[in-house]
Length: 335
Image (cartoon, rainbow, N blue to C red; front, side, top):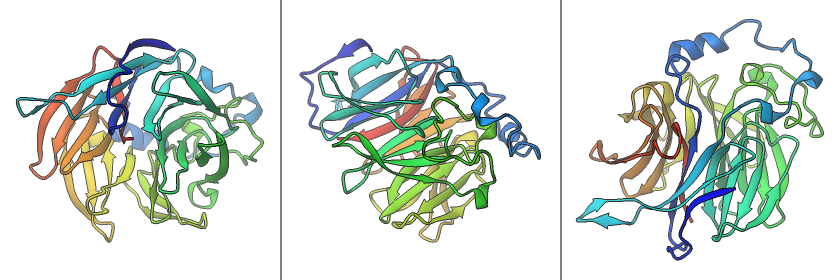
């Protein structure tokens, strides 16, 4: 790990905003709704013609790396929000996908790795699993576990952070999403990475909800739910390219990014569209609640973090991120 900036004297007990930045620039043509719809509508996409054993290691899937930044967003100057950078570092063996500051540890989720660090950035633990591949997000549950979304295995991994072990794996059902490879828990999708076009759903987020797990998928543009017993149901679909499903802590509403259109979508209690908030143009990768009506959004088409007051429907601040990478990815705010 290459450390660029790190302030141990900062208040690490408060909620912090963690951001991942990719060295990969936005390809606007490949981010369009038309492109994604046509790409995944190909009739011969599944099952793949390429044998599972011929697929290469996950590290060969992407030539890009990236950075992680951690911000104190309580910093104000004259009443204006001025986020203060307290940590910036670059993992050198895996592309960082998502990072969270949780329970005194900084968890850094890469494409095929999950590492934990203390506030001094000393390494304290590693989680490894055959299905931990194409990883996207990591979120804590109320009972202290961690949910890891993995696109290459179309699965959610449930991690015990005390033992650094995966204790449960839930795969999206082939009965609903088609068949690619009949994965057993011993099949390593790290050693044999299943690329996007061979994936069932491109699962990109897993978030706790009603004792179970909400998920969002890019290919179908679907939001689904694993109930507390592990049974799956699809709640809605059609938002092709959607990312980052979450729940607003103020009222329990589900929200996600309609990425191709640059919109945050908030749902009603009966899963209809309550409102759509325009933040980006070509690609809005992620959005997360900060406090009250304030949200942060990873506006990849501007390579920035926008701070949005959703009640006023207004961008109240923007943090340029060109110095950290080519595009902003996933966000987390918490402690």
